Length: 298
Image 1 (cartoon, rainbow, N blue to C red):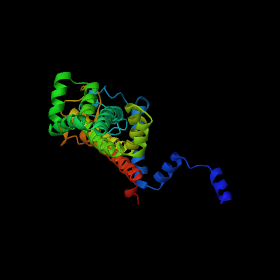
Image 2: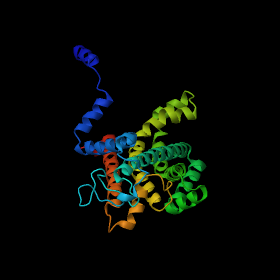
Image 3: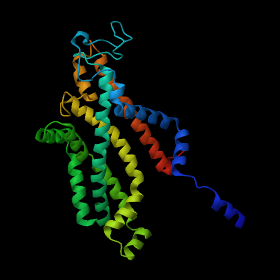
Image 4: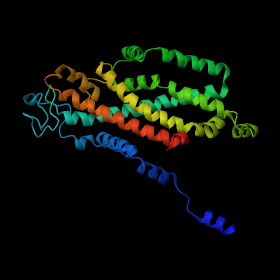
């Protein structure tokens, strides 16, 4: 027994990174999702070097040119041009920047607000819980589009305002899930022990309760990124997003709807970009759910 213990103690521990890599290698879905997200991130980061043309400058001599493989297409514009002669491929590449920034930053804001309120609601209970949950129910009952219309009408268009709208309106799922987790954790022995040794409430929540709620938070955040990307495209499509001069997938869809019958590529390619990005995020989120929930592992 002592020899076995000695061997076990000298064996190198398996790192969490290696375990995660093995799980990814065993999941073709995760590889596909991560591959799609990698492509989108590369486009967003290296857009100035990848885009063959300036996404804002057009050439009126080549308006509504079809993709290069179609009759009348031009090789220098692989995915065609729009009604102002701007390169579709370059605008899609630059549009990835807006989608990634909005998706990630808005989710971080929503997560910070929702997790904080969920921790307070679940730990203290009573009147604190009642007030926070009533606010959550009111927001859930209020249509998102009307809320976005109200805020954007007051603040005006812009990337920062769009992120603020999506971030403020997306905290409820985090708050409700974290609240349920904390209501179970606050009665556990390690929390009682922390109280007994005189730990402050902030330390208990930050050091002992929050780490035990990270798994569902990560899964929710992953799925919320996909939803936020779609919401950004929808609001921009309705004219409530960023400025019209900024190349985004939602703006391209809005501009292409008028030419669907004569220039299908104007709306087709940005729509495919949104679909593939959201699909990749959802696949990764589904894989993360399987990883963090042992009951769902096959």
